[in-house]
Image (cartoon, rainbow, N blue to C red; front, top):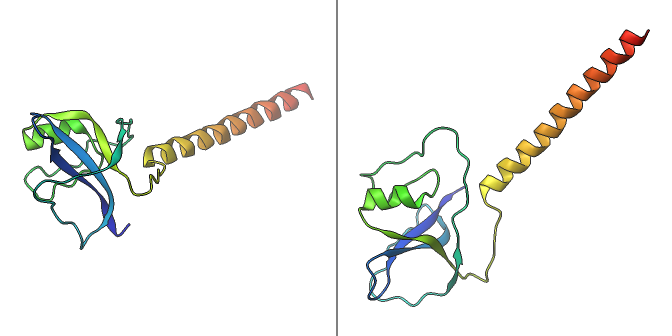
Length: 132
């Protein structure tokens, strides 16, 4: 992709915790920080399990902060601030996309089916050769 999924911490009036706002896919050349009071509209998105191989790629001293996967605990540790345990996804006609973790799980499911089929075929063929 030619961009990043942009998350921005939002200070909610009279609250100590920050709310992480998912601003959607932003082109590499376009990331800009919003300043001042903002009125936003969106829906709450609970964190989902995200499968990655190895540790989360994280450069805590680089800005903007770039992560391989969104982990609110990692963000909280790097920014030294408490966050709500959910993300507010901005309402851009409420388009909901399938997260990468679902693609990976779907692929693993079909590879498992293929492996089971291959093992079953080998067992079936071995059984037939022993009968003869």
